[in-house]
Amino acid sequence: MTDRHDRHIEIGLAKHAVSCRVRLLDDRAPLTCAAVWQALPLAGDVYHAKYARNEIYTLLPAFAATEPPLENPTITPIPGDLVYFSFTDTMLGTASYGYGTEASHAGHPAVVDLALFYERNNLLLNADTGFVPGTVWGTVVDGLDRMADACQDLWRAGALGETFTFRRA
Image (cartoon, rainbow, N blue to C red):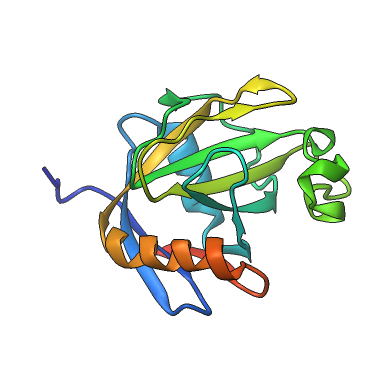
């Protein structure tokens, strides 16, 4: 049930001109929600997952004064989950990931991965490091069907030139 005090953001894919409304899970991930909220608006190149399956994400320089701890953790996100990950720049810097310098932001100790899971059957397992728990900090409350169609298009046609956006609603 939606409370009048719930905070919402809008996430979108700029080129696809599609967006959806997300309710922040302040009750379950308060520090992560606060960090993201304070940093908005955010945007970056979008990637489609190789390993986790039905996921799109962007990589950003760490933006919180203090990196939030793991809250409301999962390794099995469901459709509509927004998940926050924090990685050291060297964790994503290998050639197998294909990011080049995108995953290494000079002067920042961490790379933040903001992800949307748009379909079922996801498992956060990395062949290099094992299970990769993330913080579920938001849930899509409107527009997931349209966003999922756009995400499938990214999977099939490619994500080059597309931007993943986050802003207050």
